Image 1 (cartoon, rainbow, N blue to C red):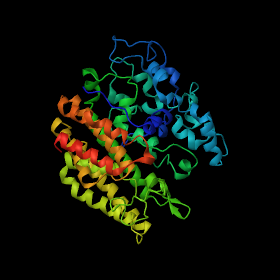
Image 2: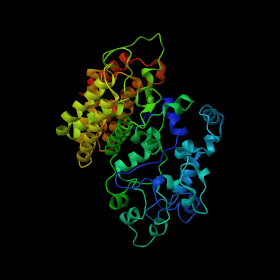
Image 3: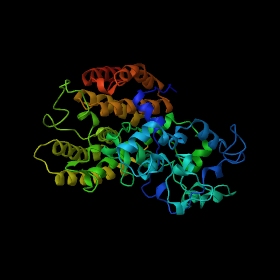
Image 4: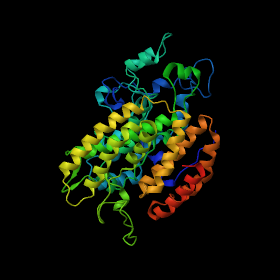
Length: 444
């Protein structure tokens, strides 16, 4: 297996600073569950999940709590709300409460559930804790240790299915992108919050592992497919974006649309740069929707469900044209976003059934590098996603035994990384040149 490359300081900062709970198509999201959250301390016994070292007597490692407590940056999600930066953000937003007490902050920086759903040992200062991702434990904390316990039964009792690729993608993107229940607004960003970005499989790979993918895990939960996780992460991010655009109650901020739907660098770039291109917008001066995840989805669909691609591509083109046209109306953009979201869900339902075999992953990798030839990565956000996505897919290929192709990719990834180290100095032409060289190396 090839070594996993690290990425830019801007992205690494997010891993350490931000929290991430949310999710599920059919499953209730942890923060919206009707069940009571009993508190992380209930998992901390040395005979449960609080062992200092891994154990072999049971299928689980039993040191999960210890790993989370000692290594996981999510434990600091609440604590950072008390630092000077968070205090300044709260002041700029004119919040009635300090950041560590304000709902808008706690929703993502802790497991923020109503007081009526907090057990006697619950402590919000735990940050993004066990129940923030695995669901309130009131009903499953007992059944998950029964002799005949099953994963399916635990899920019925409120355990969140983090082994399901789309469910875990919704969980992570809910805070790292924002969704309808916990929207992240341009006001929050303007108040001083760091720029938000995520690629689910990459972030999961950087998380300290508190599980082992072995035969027992697969027997209980099914296949663990990094390629599928990457793909579902792109679908989830795209769905969150389209829901924002399509909702007139959310996509308004005074007399202008909610600016979180746009690429940050469409506006936040040096005035002297003068780098407009027809690939950035229909006309000069028009901000471009941050469609980096939609670009990735197109690659997924072409590789795994090509019959779904024409309809999806047509609607993405319509959204891009309408959103950068001076003559467009918000009502028309909202309509296209709703249609595109429906088409996105249809494509996702097909992709979810596809096994991400080595040939599919190889095709997907070549799609990602080939898209550079048509300048599909014109802005920093799409280039950032391209880098993380190519890395994720190459890692998936290595896991499936194709280390030769993965090595060919990883041999050039440091060149791409250097071009992403400073978003304000990003040069799209240099990035495209490096991607074309990578394309030649892997035969895209």
